[in-house]
Amino acid sequence: MIKLHQVSKNFSQFQAIKSVSLVINKGEIHGIIGASGAGKSTLLRLMNLLESPDDGEVEVNDQKLTSLSSIDLRQARKSIGMIFQHFNLVANKTVFENVAVSLELANYPKKERRNRVMECLQFVGLETFMEKYPSQLSGGEKQRVAIARALANNPQVLLCDEPTSSLDPNTTAEILGVLENVNKSLGVTIVIVSHEMEVIKSICNRVTVMTDGEIYEEVSIEPKGIQDIDDSPKRFVEQLTKDGEMHHA
Amino acid sequence: MPEILVQYEAEIWGAIGETFVMVGVSIFAAVLIGLPVGTLLFLCRKGQMIENKFVFSTLNLFVNIIRSFPFLLLVVFLIPFTRFIIGTAIGTAAATIPLSIIAIAHYSRLVEQSLLDVPRGVMEAAISMGASVKEVIFKFLYVEARSGLVLGLTTSIISFISYSTIMGVVGGGGIGDFAIRYGYQQFKTDLMIYMIIIMVILVQLIQFTGTTVSRMIDKR
Image 1 (cartoon, rainbow over the protein chains, first blue to last red):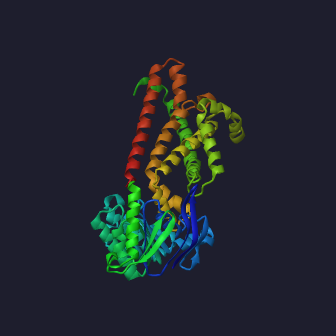
Image 2: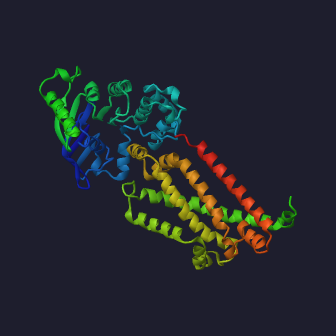
Image 3: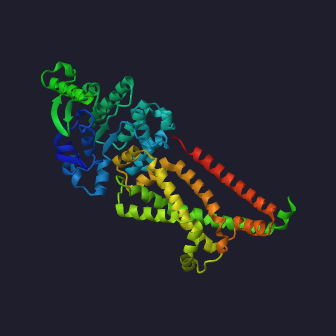
């Protein structure tokens, strides 16, 4: 579903991503975890070319994004949803308009837009919030609107950049529940970047651990949770603690 | 009504009309050209959607140069240009040219500043949804920055009124010119004060309207 082939990204002198290759399978919930500055967000943003790689190839939905024209790239992005840590809703648009704009961009038939927006809002449980503005919503509600917006065009992939990092633990669980539902009932492949182990543990099937712009390791997680599997997850946990210490030092 | 106002009623209305023409054309130029210029200034910046050093530097230099002129000098400096466009450098129509030039420079800078206030993440969300440059501008940037754009225009309009008062030097007329010629030069101080009162009322009305509209459309 998503293939990164020897992808590199530099920010002036800093090598954010160092020739990383990664394959994410269809239907997976894939976590990317690592300390801050490890390149996990950059890696995610390469998947819809929000950052364009200096080297390497990015393939999503069997399309090589890195060789598309800008018009085709915009088209391709319509089937790659994305949500963010700070939600990034348009504050001057109502909940309804925030979701509808995504349909407008995709030239969704005008007459059916309203129904589609309603469907998406129902899916995230916010159908009664249509006329509200983002400033009237809680963080969790804003993220639900962002999810509805990202789902409007029936994407095959949903990219989540620290989706719960500005939410409290209860709301985090709620949003993770919604994401799990997106994966299970709509079959959307999900990639989640997070620095919180709990988040990754609770919903991911597979995890990529990043350090210093490289993949440290990839780990499969059984649904029962990470603590029950031996060896490699321990390294994963150790790695994270090590990173944490390095950070405090 | 004071006798002196009755006596000069026709001239006063004429002067008000001239001010409206000069300021009206300036507003038109500000919105029609200043808004796109300000948007380009923003979008061509480093790290923005259509980053372009050449376009940015050129527009930036143009805006800075125009704005560093003392306005009176700009008017005089532009006389050949005005004559080329309008056919004459004298009169209300001719006065609109330097006013429009300063209006474009003035408002484009305020537009750029308003757009800089739009959270970067909103633009990223737009791009991630596959929005084109035009769609980002009209469906996201202007929507999110609209109250700032209105407030900026309000500030600009008030500056245009102020600039228009010195257009008497090229026979542009207007309330300011009337106040100088009749009030100051003919020692009718009361007439000058009435003109100032008219200007104060005008500015109050514009500021009130601008503030109210911008508050009404701001849902942030």
